[in-house]
Length: 461
Image (cartoon, rainbow, N blue to C red; front, side, top):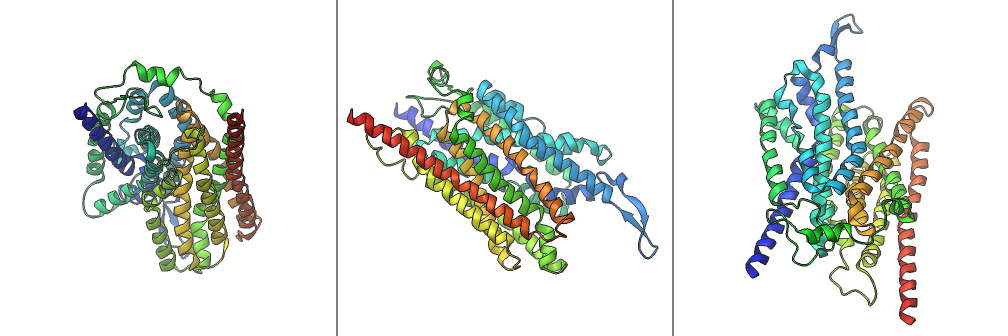
């Protein structure tokens, strides 16, 4: 028995470490697209869309705006697929289990290695596969937190932070390309690394999903779980998906995520024009601030676990008499939700201030808030709702918030066409909308207080 427990402990540690590497190096690389575009243009992808045109002084210049638009469309479609197919990914994960979900996600996403620039149109499926496969890796890895009960939320938020920071991979590819290593060689190496994903799928994951809380004598991987896990997963008296989606907790959580995410998308979309205005168009200053912003984005993996520690802070204490573990987890989430909302408000105010040097602080609070937001979103769903619905609820909320984020285009168009490039009124309006986010932690607090009141009444009877 001690040998078996030691093997299981080592397997859990190996599952956690390799999962962190997988999220950090592969899951969210789509969002490093800005660095990869530089390489793709050097490799002449969509070069045929560049045309000769006449400049202001009558000289012949090469106009590559068509190439830029096509590359931008590649990313737009891939990011759309990343958001909306998360729903399908979640359903597949919940209904067919980890093995099926991961094998579908480990497609040959690195088509860059196998087609020349003459077939540039294949960038569309290639980047879309990278996006969808990456989100599937994240969803299947977040369940690893179930193996570590007292650190469950910390691990979930850490994996989400690693997902954000994985955009650095394309930066590394750009640096390797500039040092003389071909793009084809870089993506051939990444394709070979897919073997690691397959090995993890069969040796470090269950066929189904990792339940929470774990049953006694739970095993997984090459030993595999038995029928007790299947019984544990499917024979409980859990809430239905419909009950979860129509609950007050879920509805306010959707609003909470959507309004804060919209603030972030607006900031990123308007960042370059804002810096152009604040620096009076000085190229070196704009580049300096853009580089500073890019650097802070890589710190997500360091910031995200702080939120998990907040949510896990009460797990090592004995529960009050009659209190369920879920109620204790919800109590712990109130502070996390409130701090995330507060950071979003501070971030929105700083982003609206027309002060150039203040933007360094804005970059820091932005990445901190973003890390708390996405890690906290996944952690809250895992504690507030049955684990058998986690994938579906995660996919649904990401899709709904993505639809809401389309308002950014209306806001940016309003600034450009009506407000003559001055975003002040839009920033004020969005900051006021951010106040809606504070309703969510209040709603969870009142829900917990109601549960405590019901528990007290039952103990008196």
